[in-house]
Image 1 (tube, helix red, strand yellow):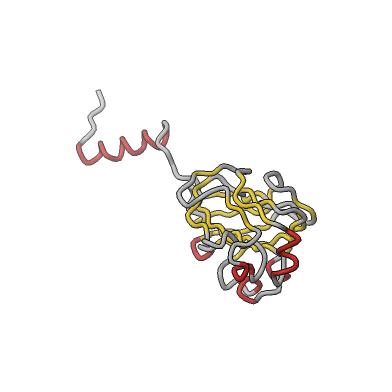
Image 2 (cartoon, helix red, strand yellow):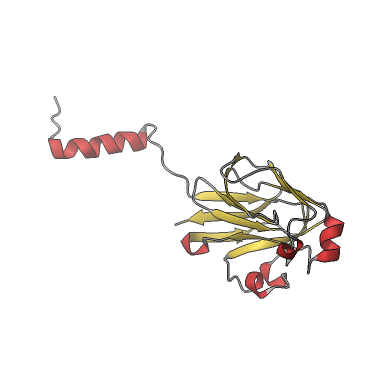
Length: 179
């Protein structure tokens, strides 16, 4: 008969949970393309807030169509009232901002339609926002759409894995590991 002393019982229970189904929080997030278009590095974004990574690391997409889908499974934590930007958070804790175009806040929501609201749970490919691409081209500084890891300081690794053309809801664009 094996005796387990009180102070060891806690350790034994923890060990069994880890071995046999105790949930461990995943630290990794794969970011799928939220738009169809051409992936760009942040230094190609004609706005220093994004190109100098002031908001965090990430990538950008120059879209060829006006639909944004969720690049991750998670929760909508913010939908800007102008519908030009959406904030998401994954189970791993990765926080992602999708900012449709540059200087689009000045459009005050014109040409944007949201399909979600803050608090909604989303899967990869869930439609988030549709927008009039031609209207954004004519009224905004640029249609280039930054996809930013806003809590980059909490990441262990960030790597862009796509290049060239990407398909919304399908192409793996980046891999993030949280600390």
